[in-house]
Length: 201
Image 1 (cartoon, helix red, strand yellow):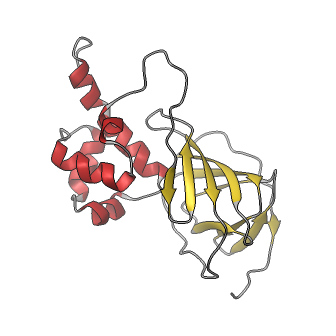
Image 2: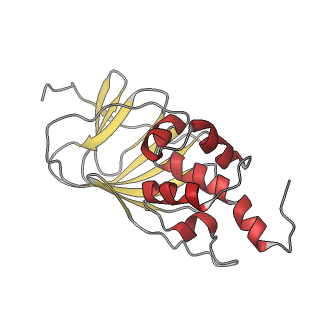
């Protein structure tokens, strides 16, 4: 049931679910993984995202902490009519993510910077629903995709079904800047990457 147009509080609460789903998908987390990190049950997380569970402070605080966003970002909305994106960089391990879209659901866009590698240990590949598009703005990106080990240079792009085991990392010790589009569907981007034999690090 939609919130009345004259009830901004109810409308804000109604928008929390899609916003939570968008944040989780942007971080490429499953409901199970998010449940393990927050202590909130999978069923509760699912109902929160679908709007079947009313968000409470007790539930939103650990989610805001895990997603590293202010609490008001979960329950607020961009100023009406303001087309600017008020993005906040998010630090994730050895990378920094700058969201470029705020529309809940659908394709999410963000810029990601992978800082110089400090270890030769390869990251664990992951799988999840959806498609992903990568465009290298600068540096050299290494893409582990199923049985493939690919290197993408500046100006190169790749798209793939994220149900294929995958991981991204620097191809060398230098930082990599890339544009990422992630979503369950949308127009496919041109694929252009150089196959590279997998090294034993």
